[in-house]
Image (cartoon, rainbow, N blue to C red; front, side):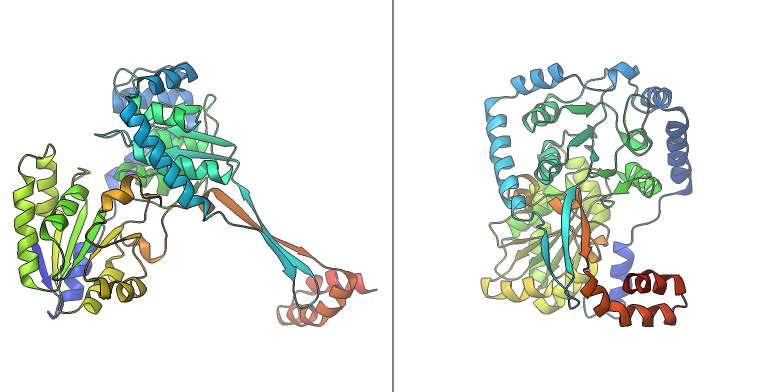
Length: 431
């Protein structure tokens, strides 16, 4: 474990260096741009070509979309235990996010004009569900559920298939259970291209959602503007803040769980108020690593992406957290310290409070979406919410009396900005 001391002279420089996310290599940027250009220019033919080249899948345009009968069969094949877990998690996610639904309002401004806001669902969204090494069933729930709560009429889900054109039964089953009927066995960079530009077979979307690997993240960055993109979530992150009340075995288990995602670029942070805590958690990590199925991938993260930070006070720990802006933050601290820490930490994607609240609860079932900002983007982004699937429109309605009350202000601004046509557009209403 790399170790930094808060009171060391070069602490901020070294912390910033560890957090820094390097720009994608130029070769990657060029490769992504070439794939996107191919999809934009050649549509379905490019999807066929790129699916074969990248994923080894021999698809025809007629096979891009998963048939409803295939979704239904996959749902029937789900074991009862899986169906129960999915239903329970979906219920909690719905309940939490229903509370976040934006509401319109109406009132009067100082001119007596009626002003307010309304919120409408986006017309059509695309949701990227990574294939990778594991089927991210929970990510379906954490995205699709919010889109449905927002009332989005067209929800298209994109996920890569294997060489035989197959998609995980668990993914298809949960999609069917969520009421999703438009699913494409098309993913990765060329899937982003299909979402952004559309093809003869796949209609373009208005906004792209979902987590991504480095390649897909770069693709989303490049298509932004042609289509909306709900952030650029990258490799997973976890910070644990621990004082003397923390259970080292709990902290270690949670750090290993986040390292398990397996890209090798995950970042895990342990911020502790005493050296003995750092040592105890590191020892527990080594002990628990034995026997884990993905131990090799986890070890790579421990070697490259594990940072221990020694602080003297929890106020210092809060400063570190606000700088890092971690995707997930666990507070394994004395109960009396929790309110002040929660109040002071303002950049974390999600905060898990207490020894009995591991991040995995947020990953799967607690309620908030687990699609959260990474790479220090929590300084200016929040986690996914229902409002991200909606547009806000302001409403303004003036009467003749209101126009008269506003006239002096409009005339002053028209003169200051030398925009006489602006001024005339109100003057003409007073004649």
